[in-house]
Image (cartoon, rainbow over the protein chains, first blue to last red):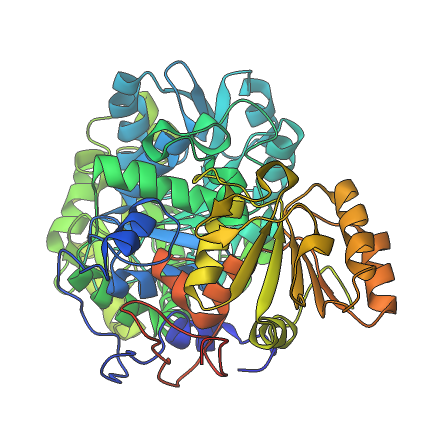
Length: 429
Length: 178
């Protein structure tokens, strides 16, 4: 290839995936192996000492998974990536590399319910604290950042509320306080929005969703933006201090602008262990090849469905940034003009019971707890994903009793609308 | 040369064209980046000569350490500088006094001295700053992708495997071990 910069669709197909050097196989083989032989003891020592590029053990690297990693890094415009078992484990390893007991994360209050649980409960047992900022008020992040804040964490497009986060404003605040900005880009995908271009330092995904896109494989990824100077303070010892795990090596000094991805791999993934299976990596990278096509259709269908719901007399409100009257419309136009994503919420008249009735009566729209499938999916968050939260937290997270969340799939939009039409008709009163 | 952004072809031509590399600031400490780079470049078939006055006469990875560039008994193709940006200036001046001029001055990640670069370029040398030859070789050969790093290389050609398992040469042209 010449020095021409390839386009997004080309990267989605080619990045990371040359033909297999041993066999010439054009599609990346599934290297379903736990381990890799060494040339000799010196080669082994070089690999264990991080002095050579190569494979040791599939918990740490795998050639199939490496293709997925390089591809996502390319699509997000990052320096490197690390694929792991799930989006949740991507968050665990990211914060593991940044946090020591007593530190805190300033996080947007509009996050996926599972992330709110992880930050509120599981992370607290590590001594990692969380402070919740108002996702729609960048100044609230500035007010909460203190000397022990090690990360600002937001979603580019918040799940489930359809809130487009003002990333550039929050990035500016984080930068002024020298705190890295971590952005979960699961709902938008890099096709709609590339957070690194708006000031993000680290980008995370649940690859399980739109990236893989077929609802068949779990995976997560950490993308290193290469932008944060980990040695600019004493706050990130995993990156800026000699590591006893590697005889005193300093990771940032050694690996430069992809040191964060390396730290997550050789400290976090090595020791905590949430490795993705090569099979899942293969399924996810195959899905990514059609990401641009799928994501555009997801968005086009979602807009049609949102317009239909907006005009329905049993629907009290629709929160979809793609609707011109929506409070998030201007931010959608700024950050993700190709589409406002395919997941949004709407309120049904009749509250909790009406919400339950709609999700129970859909015929082709599946009632389940996932998003970003080829299939349309629907859920009533108050009774499922956000059930563990208090009523106050539910409302703050955009998951009140009347809220129904839909992930619009790739079926014919007319069929999705017809299914919703008969489900809404089942609401009593 | 625009030293903010190098075309891949420029870096590839350098890594393909040099054979003997003097590594200034070579360390015997096995976790220092200069040791890593020395070891990696040796494994790729380059002749690498460590330069470090404190280690002169000793060996690192079987290579005799010299105190200065002037002490190296053979012609040097490339000077790879593991010193800070200011100190790099004196190294470049020393390199430009050698009886046989090197072809390339390479300054490592975070090392940049534009005045020294101009001096070298005026004498016809190629200059690379704020880059690592290990990372660039790994990137251009695709090897670095094994670690999830964005190599920024796309190719539908079958990669060339070199001697030894898990060793690749540069993707589209001959590497120095051919």
